[in-house]
Structures are given as C-alpha cells and as structure tokens.
Length: 74
Image (cartoon, rainbow, N blue to C red; front, side, top):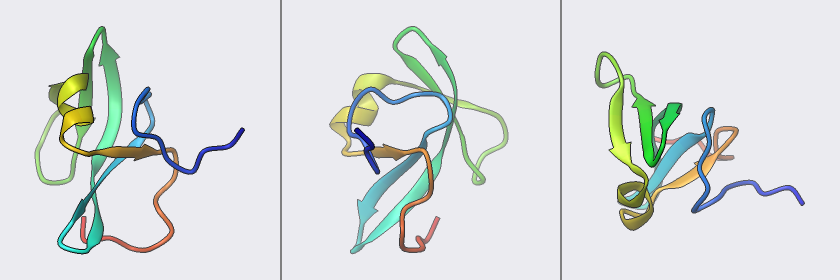
C-alpha cells in the first residue's frame, strides 16, 4: 500500500513537514538514524540536528518521501 505521508516510522530520506499558520512548512530531510535519534539537515542550519523520535511524533511532524503537493514556506 502506498502512503503519501506518515506520522510514525520515519526513515532516512524522508522530508519532514509541520502544519503552521495554514500551510505545510518543510523542516528538512532525515539524513541519518542512530537508534531512536534522527539526524535532520535543514537549509536554516549548517550541519545536522539530532532529535529523538518522540520529539518528532509529539510535535506533530509528518514525513513524506516526496515534497507535498502544494508549495510550502520552507
């Protein structure tokens, strides 16, 4: 079954989005996974930001292999 997006079970290569002020905002791409930590690369920061998986789940992020249909601010 094909899923356009997912709310759990994020993987390396997924793009992260969050709904903010009426639009989906791209918050970067997962480039690394070590245990329960994800490495996120964004345009806003140099390097990789490491976050626990429960932070992504509890803050309302979704993940998609591709960018979402409509353009976003990020």
